[in-house]
Length: 538
Image 1 (tube, rainbow, N blue to C red):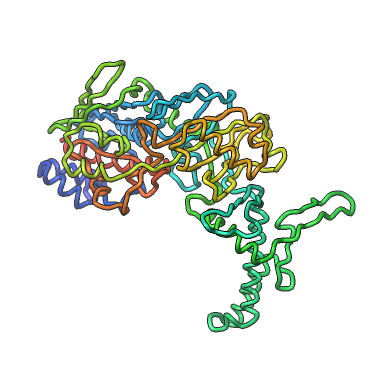
Image 2 (tube, one colour; image 1 turned 90 degrees about the vertical axis):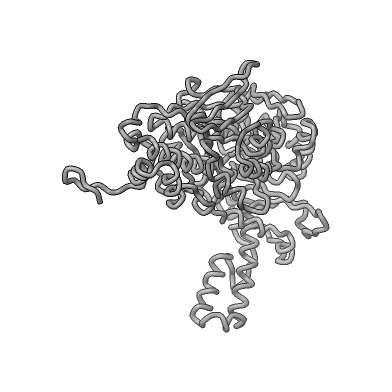
């Protein structure tokens, strides 16, 4: 404890670093920062207990000086860095190559244009009010993303990540025989009831026949049988189907008790491999409930951009052409309106994806340049299909959720908004199998696959579509970042600043492909940069 006028104050990490910087200079400061773990290792990719920076953390001589920071990229990480640094009075300028904020958090609406790196342009012709999230589309309960929605006043609504009425559809492919259920659309409700029923029957039989006696006490064996009966809905220790799997003739009035369909055989259910799909629900980042911003995922980016200061702070259509670290600052060159311009700042935060950043001329160290060359862009894409009526709701009672299939569409997403409306947009694939196809062929192939599941209405009632191929998005070159061989030396290198340039993005977290990863990475960089300024400002 230190005291001022008799009042105890805790010796904070920031105040300690300030004193180190004053007494020992930059080399002592950096040694202390490294010892304290401010140049983070992979295990420290998150920022638990994040405290937004404050001007009060700075020495009196530095307050109001307006340390200039140029931030490259107005995606989630870049906007978060500008937002949090702005709270402490930093003079932030954001350069964004696109004409809007958000980066890969892209929501596509009527009039939007998508131009691939091969020069092909699509124009979205959805009806007003219709949209689809071409990038991230869901938010788990526990992600910091929801904290920012609350702070920024972005309303959210439930996203149906799993639905009893959505479907499973497996084709015989790749030499694998899926048995009598191959090529048959089966509801999640039916598949789950049948798989749990038969597996529970096997478990109960094993316990009753003494097969588990060496593993369980007699009392525990009885409890296993009790669990199996409950989990599987068994009758007399057997699974014969029940209302959990739904009805072929639903219950009605009077004496109409409904008719439960007879389940396929145990062998057919096991051969279908539907049960291998259920693990999805147990994923830490996939478990219900899931959420989405009302009106599209880019509502978060729009709110962040407004909080940062809008066009007063963010320059759009300004691709970066050069980054030069200097002993006292950073100079960034960029194109705007056909001219090359420069901006000088005390620090730089680069959130440009490494697949793009590696091709921009810099004077980074060779270690940093080598590290930027390691990550690769994920091959993925999506298509939004607008239909004239919401037949999945009207005909099939599917309100949100995802149909899973082993076909190359990977899954079909039904919208979790606009319920009971007239029209809607279905995500027809979330897959890398379509990115090299011409635009028209993407729709044709995706619709042909959907017809196998939903019949000809999937084609006949389609009004318009638009698709995105993330490897062909000029300023992304991938849906997210992959680290071949796992996070290693290259990952560690980019967790550290190169001179006065810091790096941030979801690729520098353990939440790759989630907006939460971008938030967490930006907050980590903001903390490190702010503590560096606090320690060297006196």
